[in-house]
Length: 171
Image 1 (tube, rainbow, N blue to C red):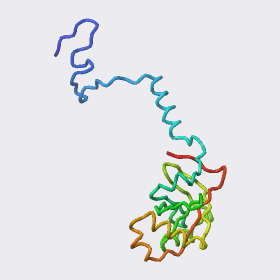
Image 2: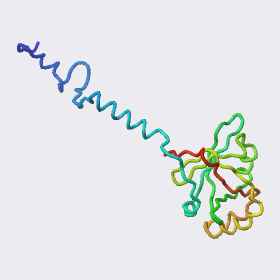
Image 3: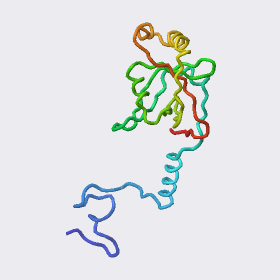
Image 4: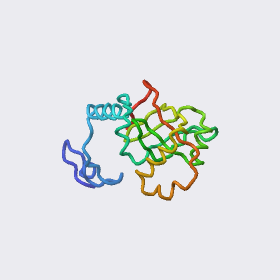
């Protein structure tokens, strides 16, 4: 048995030595003040901070936009689609599968939208058949692979219009 000097714990029980309980724990201890500061910071970062600003001109350079629909028995579903901006309005062109999701969307006429780090909870998905040709031309000009994609069916063209006052910014 190791020698015990007066007023000190045996060598085997001192911090930083191997004990029967496992490896030594030399990590610095977090103060209670530091713990609460970290807790406050994480809470502030996780809380929506401000209303997101719908800025179509900023979205013109975005490659895709994500749409959220809600289906019975499935819940929320997010899917990416190409996006174009015409006359300061945001448009998407949907294939049959995505168009079917919009038609069965329980939150209709609203969808959720994610673009450029912003998330909008309620965006009105307005059918825009009168813009289908202009959107198709804008897609062809923006996306080189539209050379092939434009041959596929795109039964639904939508204009995305945010509902003012209910949008939140999420990171």
